[in-house]
Length: 212
Image 1 (cartoon, rainbow, N blue to C red):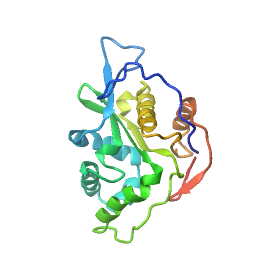
Image 2 (image 1 turned 90 degrees about the vertical axis):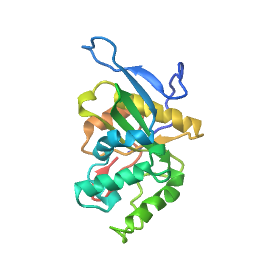
Image 3 (image 1 turned 120 degrees about the vertical axis):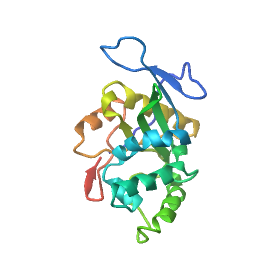
């Protein structure tokens, strides 16, 4: 199921505000540059569709809402907050020509109890019975909560660069293990993570779904 020790990678040319990469494309004509950087509040409107795509059906559990419009509104609230698992402060984005083409959400698993408190406070309105979430993580990990790439940009190295950026953030925070989970049926994503150096550690069943 989950991660490895951090992968070695070069930080040459690292910029304070982000990292600049070429988009991978065998048929590239002209310059196609993307920037991986920390998310900002002004990115929320552009990024929320991808964030909800990453969370899938789990977005209903986390929001306590059943209608799509209500889910979007609740996650905008989460993302614009200064605290909580889904604060913009815990995201990085891939930006291409002022378009958010990828997002990744990460945090220290040892901070989850504190990070979840903000979610529980927000959930009191629609889902007061929700006082805990099933644990996706193990102690002492830099956990990659969610990752999504715009379908039009898949297969062009965006996910790989987002994960490498998250690794850099984890290293800066003194973390030594990075982890994630993937649905057992998502074979393509699983093998992407294996190619990036992750190793399957265990299986988990979360909300009726099988993960590794």
